[in-house]
Image (cartoon, rainbow, N blue to C red):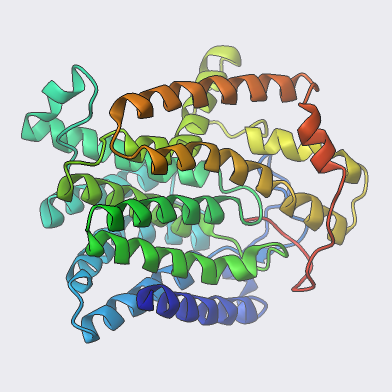
Length: 378
C-alpha cells in the first residue's frame, strides 16, 4: 500500500505540472489534430501523461528500495526494460514522426530485455501445440515478444476517450495484485499496486475533464507493464493458469484482433489503417445520442467521458471471472469463448443501430461533469 500511495502522490503532482506547463509548451506537448477518425476531443491537450506515470513508478521504486523491500530490485529492472517502449511512444507524442511499426519494434525490444534481465518468458500456455513451441527457448522468446508487443499495442488501440485505457489498466492491475497476494507473491503484488497508484494519479486529471492525454508513450508503457507483470506472475507461480493473463487482458486484445479482421476481410483495407468504428467509437457515436448535434465544448466533454464507463464494465466482465477462477484453465477457456461471442454480438447490434435497451437506457441519463476543467479524451 505504501508503494501505491507514493506512486499516486508523485504521479498526481507531476501530471499537474505538465498540465500547467502545457500552455507554455503547447507547440511540443499538445495534440493539435482534432479531426482524425479516432479523435474525439474539442481543443488541443497535452498528450504526454505517460511521463507522470513513469515518474510515479520511479518514486515508488526508490521508496521500496529505501524501505528494504524485496520488490525494489524487480521494479527497477521492469522500469529499465520498459525504456524502449516508453521512449519510442514519447518521441512520437512530441514529434509525430515515429511509425506504428517502429513503436512495435521498440516494445519488442522491451520484451526481449525482460526475457534477458528478468527471465520473464512464456513457457506454458495451456494450448496444445503452443506448449510444444514454447518448450524451446527460441519459441518461448518469440511468443513472449509477440504477446507483449500485441498487448501494448492493444492498450494503445483502446486509448480513445477520457479515462478509458487508464481505468481498464487499473482494473487489470487490480486483478494481478489480488492473485499475486493470493499465491503469496508480494513482489508482483507490490509492483501491481504501485502501477495502480501511478495510473490513478494520471486518471484524476484525465477523467472526466480530459486535461491531459495518456499519449503513445503512456499507452505503450502501460501495455508493456501489464504484460510484464502477467508473465512474471506465471513464471514465479506455476499454480496460476496460463490463460489467466489472457482473460484479464482480453478486452483490448480482442478489440485489436477483431479490428484487424474487420479491416482486412470486411473492408479490404490494410489492418494498420485507422478508422472510427471501434466498439468505443460506435458507443460514442450511436449510443450517446443525447448529445448528438451539440458542439459545445462542455457537451462534447461530457459525451466523451460518459462513453468510457460502458467499456469499463465490458473489461470487468472478463476480469472478474479471471480473478475468481485464476487457477482453473478450463474455466478460463470457457470465459474467453463467452467473451468473444458477447463482444461480437454487442458490436453487430450497435453497428446496425440496434443497441441493447439497457445501454440506451443508461445513455439517456448523463451526469454533470465535475468542475475540474473543460474537455477532452484519454
